[in-house]
Amino acid sequence: MEREFDWKEDTEVFSAIEKERERQEDSTELIASENYVSLAVLKAQGSVLTNKYAEGYPGKRYYGGCGNVDTVEDIARERVKKLFHCRFANVQPYSGSTANMAAIRSLLQPGDRIMGMSVNGGGHLTHGYSLSFSGRDYDSKSYDVDKETFLLDYDAILQQARTFKPKLIVCGASAYSRAIDFKAFRRIADDVGAYLMADIAHIAGLVATGEHESPIGHADIVTSTTHKTLRGPRGGLIMTNDEELAKKIDKNVFPGIQGGPLEHVIAAKAVVFKEDLSSEYHDYIRQVVKNAKRMAEEFVSMGYKVLTGGTDNHLFLIDVLSSRNITGMACQKLLESVNITANRNSIPFDTQKPYVSSGIRIGTPAMTTRGFTEKEFVAIAHFIDEAIKAKDDLKRLDEIKEEVTRLNRQFPLPYEALK
Ligand SMILES: *Cc1c(COP(=O)(O)O)cnc(C)c1O
Image (cartoon, rainbow, N blue to C red; front, side, top):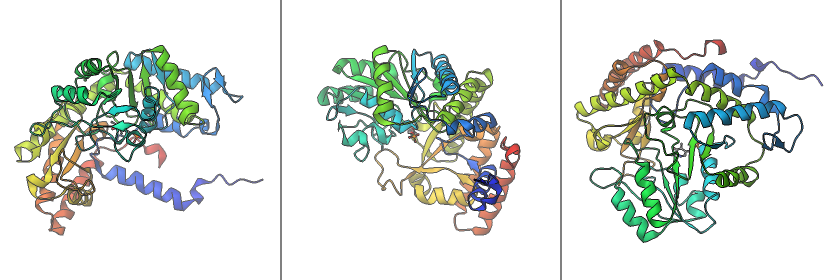
C-alpha cells in the first residue's frame, strides 16, 4: 500500500503548472474577470479540506466528522453577511453559473418568463441566453442597451417589461462599464409584479467597498462569483434578506443542483472575505477604478472608440474594428504575442460573429493587485497601440514583448514560496 507522494515526479502536469506560473508572471493580465489570489487563499484551497464530504449545511450534515468544516463554512457565511450587509448567504455554489441556476430555480417554475440583459449588450449567458439552461428551461426575452449611447435605457426596459410581463427580471453584466441603477430596476420589477435578481459577479468588489451602489435591499436575490474583483477562489455566492427565499435557495443549491460542497474552496472564500473587509482592500478597489478611468481616457486620446466614452468601474470595451480596422479576435492574438492578455468581446449590435467580434474588453483588477498604478496602465495602453500599428512587423513586436515583460517582472506575483 505504498503511495507515492512526490509530486515532482509527475512532470507532465507539474511542468505545465510551473509554465503557467511563469506565464502569469511575465504577462500583463487585462482580462476583466481575472485576478491573482493571495498565498493564504491558495493555501486554504490546497488544504486537506478537499478530502471531506459534507453534503448538507453546518449543523445538518449527512456525514460524520464535519465539525471542522462546519466551523469554516459558518465563518464564510458570517463574513459574507458583514461584507455585503445582508441577512442570509449561501457560499456553496461551485461557480457563478450554478449560483444563478439555484437562484433562478428559487424564483421560477420551468416555462415561466425571464427577462435579462442580452449577451450582446453585455449580459451573461445565464441571464436567459438560448443555449443556456436559463434560455432553455424558461421563456426568455432579453433587453438591450440603447443603440446610440450603448447605455441601459430604463424607460425602454420598463416598456419592454410591460409588454413581456416577465416573472423575473435579471440585472447585472459581464461587459458593461457604467454604474447599474438597481433602484430603477426595482421600480420596473414592481411595476410589472416581477421578482428582481441582481448578479454582481463582476462588480462585487466595488459593491462590497461602497464604490458602487449595492443591490441588497432592492433585489430579491443577489448572486456573485468570488474570483473576479473579490479576488478569491473560483466559485459562487448567493445572498438575500428574505428568510423564506433563503430556505429555498439552500434547498436548490443542495440537493437541487449540487452534491458535496467544496469545503476547501469555501475555506478559501472565508479567507478572502476577511481580506475584503480590510481597509487595504478598499484602497485596492479605489485604485482599480482610478486605473480603469485613466487607461480608458488614454485610449480615447489616442483616437480609439471606447464604448460609452469611458468607465465607472473596473473595465471598458474598445471597438477595435472601427478604431483601427482589426477584429477582436486578431487583436487578442496580436496582444498575446506581446505578452498582454485580454479577451475579444462582442460589442452591442456587433456586425461580426461572437467568435470573431469587433471589440476587446479590458479590465484593471489583476494588474492593480500586482501594484500597477495609472502610470503603468498608460504605458500598457501605448504598448497596445504600438503593437496594433506594428502588427506585421515581427521584429518590432518582439521588442514590444520584451519591454512589456520587463515591466511585468518589476511587479512580481506573491508566489515565491511555490517555486
Ligand atoms: C462571470 C460571470 C458569471 C459566471 O461565473 P462562472 O463562475 O464562470 O460560472 C455569472 N454572471 C456574470 C455577470 C458573470 O460575469
